[in-house]
Structures are given as C-alpha cells and as structure tokens.
Image (cartoon, rainbow, N blue to C red):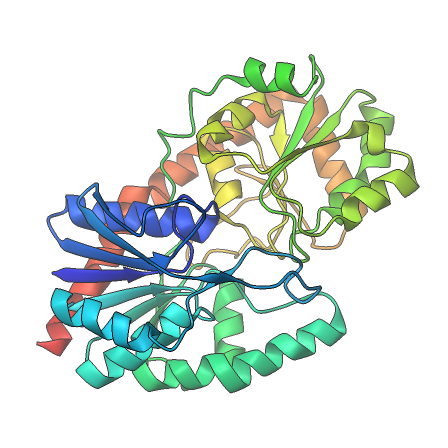
Length: 394
C-alpha cells in the first residue's frame, strides 16, 4: 500500500500523538509499505527528509498566538493560500491508497479531507484530543468549533475513526454523529522494551531528589491535565510520607497547580522538570516510586509507558477506560474516582508505603501492557484496518 500519514505534530516536536504517528509510520514502512508524511514545519527541522523508510515533508507553518483559549500550547498551522495546491501536488505525485490522519482540528487534516473526497481516497482518522476545557466559557467555544468547523470537514470525507478509549468513544458519539463511516477500537500503543533499563540515579542527582520516594507525573501541563488534584493530595501524602516528592515532567502551559502548591504550603515537595526530551523518559521512570498522570479523566501514553516500565500507577480513571480491556483496582493499577482528592491521596500513600503491594501492581501492569498494548499489536491492527479501507477503494 501507499500510505500518507498526516499530522501537524511530528518529531522533533514532542507529544503523545507526535511520537505515536512516527512509530506507526515507521512500522508501516518496515512492513514494506510506501509512506509519505505530511506535517507542519517545526523549529529547525528540515523541510524535507528521508529516513527510516519515510519521506517527510514539513510544510511552512505559523504558530497559534498564546491565548487563554489555547493555554499557550504550541500548535502550528499550515494554512496559507498555497496550501491546498501544495497538498494536492504532493498527494497526486504519491498516489496514496489510503490516508491516515491524526488530529481532527488541524488544517492539514482538513486539507487532506478535501483531497480525499475529490480523489475518492479512504481516510482513517485518529482523534487524540477532545476539544474540551474545564472553564465553562472556553468549553462553549470548543463545542462551537466542533460543530461549525471540525464536523463539517469530517462530513466531507467520512473517515473511519480510531477510538482509543471509552471517553473518546462517548465524545465522538456526542460531537461527530453522522460525520464518520464507523469506529475502530485501537488503544494507544507503546514499546515495552524502550521504557525499561533507564538510569534513575541520573534523574535523582539532577533534581536533588536523594533517596526520597518520587511521585512522577509525565506530560504537558494543560487544563485537562492540570495536576491540581495531585497537589491537593500532597498535604495528606506528606503527613504519611514526609520526604515524598512530586516530580512533574512536561512543558507547563497552565501553572495553576504551582500557585495551589504555594497556597497549601507544599511547594517544597514539588519539583518541576519542564519539557524533557523523549530519550530521558526511561530515566524518569527508573527514578519513580509511583506514577500518577491526569489525562482528562482517562489514561494516555505516559501512563501506559509507566506501566510498561513496571512502575505502579495511580489513576483517576474508570475501570472500563479501554473497551474490552480490564483495569483492575489493586491488581494491575490503583484507581480512584476522578475528582476524589482523598481517594487519590489514599492510593498514593498505599503505593509509597507498601513496597510489596506496589511491586506486584507494577509487575501485573507491565504484563497487561505487553499483552494488550504493545506497539506491534497496535501496528498490526492499524495495518489491518488500512488494508480493508484500501481494498474497499479498489
């Protein structure tokens, strides 16, 4: 097959969808398929390059202005008068059998949707982010954007949608009914081998953690992953484990949790590493006693990578987060109700003070990831669906 992979986010830009789209694209190429990647220009990355069996084209882009609506998130858009013409030329030369799009609100997704409709090319769309915001006024804006901009473009190409978890499934059913050709449940994939074997001592020395128990929280800090609940759980945690540290690794776009930590008098236990390169994630996981990653009430790539590394995870999430895959509280993860700060503190204390239980949860979580979330398993399922779409076109 000739597969076009489309995502405004692609390495060297960091992020879950960026790294997943790269991993899948490399997997498609390794399986013998021709792959063209269309993405947005980012920093000093070359406009075109060929590596890992991929041809990567980075289109000229501009950065979304820093506003409260975007919480200063560095989103690059490629919209300009020549975009549709350039996309059409690139894809006509490549002649894709199928297009795999990432991100429903990106202009490259919309541009390739127009192309797909005109050339009758089937599309698979992976939705990584729900257009939601905890602040009511911004939530209303996002809902309006979904209804007036995102859904109309989706209706043009009627993509098959990848459903990564039950929350995304409910979101799609509410926002995009009638604008797709079906749902395919495929969870986020992670590489179990890559996250193991890190050097935790290196991280402990860098951030002055010593021998303190470490609550690691990986991922950019945005309104849907604001870390406020973790900070509000800290007073109870520190009462039980006085030397515990909360290490937040990720770009801080929404600093309210830092203000809350100061107000609660626990800022001494908060360590902010800022944005870290992907290569350092195994070291962070090796230093962690427990990981807790708020993912808008669900579980994301960072949480799955922590489980893959054998780190016990405390998650404010539902047991049915992944359709058909069981999360068992106290067995392969420690669950608490979203918004339950006392329950979150209780689970964190249990992981920090009972090493036998914590180790067993880490072992069981690691086994679950290897069985159901390995990147190879997820890659095979994507290729199966893409093959079905390409066959339907023929």
